[in-house]
Image 1 (cartoon, rainbow, N blue to C red):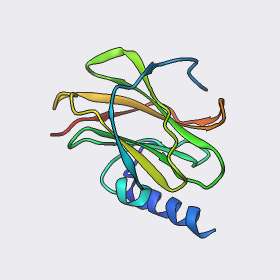
Image 2: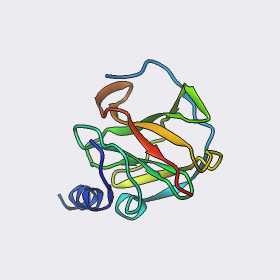
Image 3: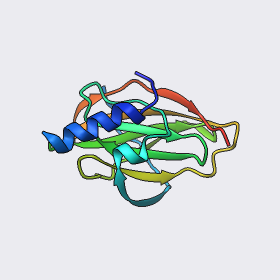
Length: 142
């Protein structure tokens, strides 16, 4: 599933507050910033959501930021897997655990302007994979 995430994630965030896996991966070397609300953070990016709607991965192509988002207050946590154009054979993994309705922003600034990432969003219960999207290719744009 690929789409602009702003409206969908705003709806998921409001619901949160109102009411096949990969065995191993290289750790992601990214700069992590504080948690931000999913509806705010994901308004200008695109990427996959896990089929159960609990996890979102979103790439902002201008600035090369990858967001790991917990979209539902379901007690589960999101994880992101991705490949990047600068090392296309290395699977990277982001496993921080934002609170429900929030995202953690990771700066992937060393992706070239013509680069890309293939990204997957997964929802986990502890170490058990519950639901994973397909990989989606997103392109850097400036």
